[in-house]
Length: 187
Image (cartoon, rainbow, N blue to C red; front, side, top):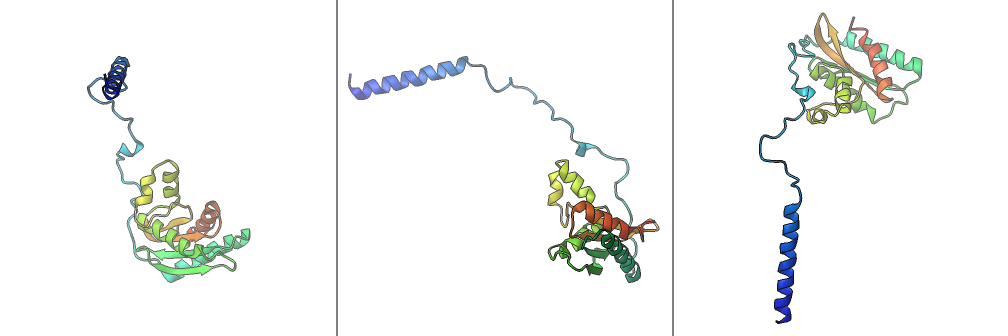
């Protein structure tokens, strides 16, 4: 027998033996049939009422927006937290803004973004942060979302008239300052 034929026979015997050994192993695939149902997701819950369903109202006035900013600045000053504070109207358009001395420049746009997201989605931006921390990463795919606390809707007579956003410190510090500003409207 030539070396080439002998090599082919040995190779074929090795492959046949490996296949037979494989056939005797229990299958990694379960028997045919219906696949097990996945565990229900909290996202499958269908609430009776729509959450955060606050109707949009007339845009916040400049005077009310400035009062909210001044209350936020007073709170930030009390703690020595230099922040950026933005107030937007019910459509998410900037009404007024203040940058405290020493507030970080990168947070100018973030304060406005937080206010815009809170107005557009009619909920505090803390809700987006909570959702992301719970693993609902799809939230990050929604337009104009920011998953960082410090954006709070401003509601007057049951209607959303705007939102306030604070940025420049930690999320929890931003939220404390925004809460003080929002308290001038949300009573």
